[in-house]
Picture 1 (cartoon, rainbow, N blue to C red):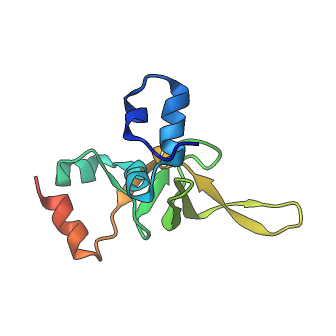
Picture 2 (tube, one colour; picture 1 turned 90 degrees about the vertical axis):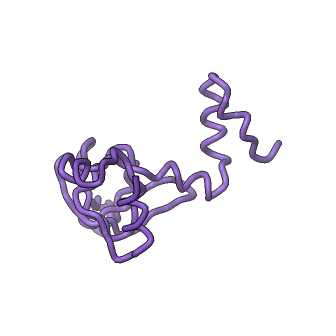
Length: 125
């Protein structure tokens, strides 16, 4: 099978779109792990979307845990999934496991601004 190709993105075919997302290298998959900002953050930074980071406080917008707020504990770039603290399911044997969420189903409520570079990128126009 062919490696990764940027031309897959140009295709209208859903099969090629899925292939593009599945076989994308990590520096491209990093762009898929973005989420909407809350209204007050949107006004403050004049941006609609920004990348997710560990430590950001997010609100779940869809699914079983709708309206739940928690901090991001881990991000899986290979599968483009986000794990939020407190969003966990109980397995049959009684152990708890974090539930993998899609970044599109989250809204950023608070940003983790420990990284100075992230502050600069958010505040530039």
